[in-house]
Length: 79
Image 1 (cartoon, helix red, strand yellow):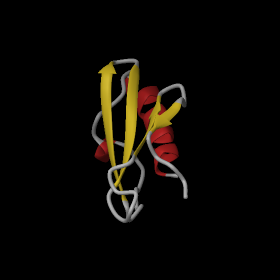
Image 2 (tube, one colour):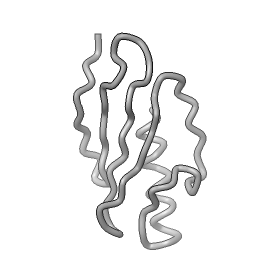
Image 3 (spheres, helix red, strand yellow):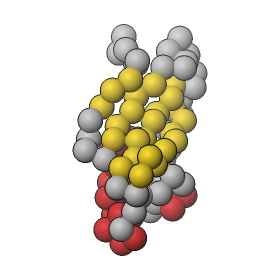
């Protein structure tokens, strides 16, 4: 759910500013996932990659990424 919130926030931010942001605080969203840390990287003004990194439990360190097109990748496995 967190990556979906970031994607929605980035779409709104882009519509208002014509570029993406790397700061989750610039987005009008609330991220409350206890075991995930979220970051955004912006390779260009028209693309971004949001990353969720698991920060607890046996899956700590696993990641999921989503880009501006909604493409999901990463090394996270659901158990």
